[in-house]
Amino acid sequence: MLRHCPSCVMIVLLAGALAATAPADVINVTNTDDVGVGSLRAALAAAVSGDAIHFAIAETGVQTISPATALPPIAAGVTIDGTTQSGASCATWPPTLLVEIAGDATTPAASDGLSINGNGVLVRGLVVNSFSGDGIQLNDASGVRIECNFIGTDSTGSLDYGNLGVGVRLVGSTLAVIGGPDVSDRNVISANAVAGVLIDAASSDNAVQGNFIGTDLGGADRLDNFNGVVVRGAINDIADNLISGNTEGGVLFDVGTAIGNTVLGNRIGSNAADTAALPNDGAGVSLLNGATQNTVGTIAAPNQIRANGTSGVRVDGATSIRNSIRANSMSGDGELGIELGAFFENPNDPGDPDSGSNRLQNTPVIVDVAYAAAVNRVTAIFAVSTDPANATYPLLVDFYGTDLDDQEGEFYLGTLSYDASDFAAGNATKSFTAIGAVLVGDGVVATATDADGNTSEFTAEAITVVVPEPTALAIGFVALGALAGRVLVARRSFVSAPSVA
Image (tube, rainbow, N blue to C red; front, side, top):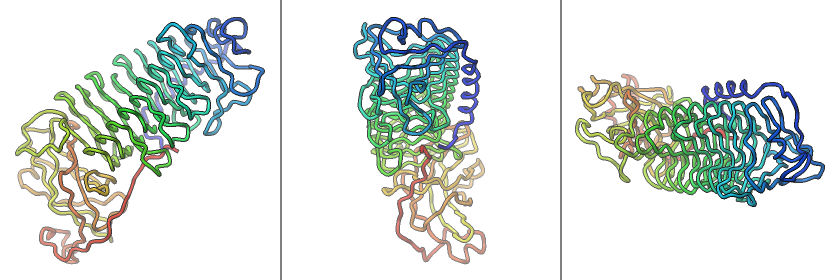
């Protein structure tokens, strides 16, 4: 798995420090009874900070605990480790999970599976399903780690035993890590009625990393949550997950308190092996109703966003601004790759005085693109019709090779800066060294991102890569506009994808 999120690593370290106190005592769960000595309920009631709850049930196979009423909340500093049950393990993927907590007999309605009310809790190696509320809920907790669990599936990770609320809900919580940087930390969070993970408006500085959200444990078939991940708080990191197959969207920011979050290195809309589409039925990523200053992809940590039912990334709402969408691999989405506001391409307006989603930043207009294979150099003639009075300059213009229908940027090529003097001059002619290979005949589109982070839609019309004449190469592409004798080759399909292996 790619480690795309340095801040996630810091959260993991801080959460680990909170959860790493040596156990004061080990409390063994020795049966599947709901009450009495050796039950999970008794262990939860007795555990205090530093204690570890282990499982030593004598029977073989999956052991199902069916609470009749809501279980006691988990106290601060307690570890619950299902891998201590004989035969269970999270050492390799897929894991073997043998302790199931099933809520299909739990009353009253809207009971949650596990409630965490204290700091520094670790929950590992459990199957939590069939509750009328949330599978796991964090309440005003800090430094919680949720690792190697199946939340909303059966013990095989392949059947829908969804919770009727959220798989993992964070309420007023900080520094939680749902998953982690290693495959052995991965959760399957699928088949839940509201969302796989929901981070509320009062929760910040949390990480959702490395999980399968909306799929089975193989990442091949859909076990849809309604939404994959919903973020309403600030400064949370969604990194290196597989978020596919959900009924509505992949990642949703839907309120004005969703500020400064990152979506990095995820695969959104394909299977884990990247051999087939596994679309979310709505948008891959949605930033709505005032979500602002969020980052969806960077050059160092792009997302792969493909084949989703509507847009790849949708930004909607007059105050949904300063959302940076850069370097992602987008292809085959049902509507626009990047959609600002309306369900159709926004035409450029002279000078770009209008406002709205990402301030309706004008798209670049590409006049020509030439490629010199000998030096892996791309030269573009382009312009952005945004007056410096209406945006914070310089603009960053990202160039992409297109997907097969020439609508979305499937592979990132490089970036050029466009400053106020370029705007005054009209067309700019600039060059960059390409990232990855370029084939003559590929289509090229671009986006513009102003210095405040407002990213445009993709260029309305792709331009075809050409080979410059030798004379043009010799004089540094000055004569690009007059090139003749263009050489075209067959188009290709190319995917630059993050790893979720």
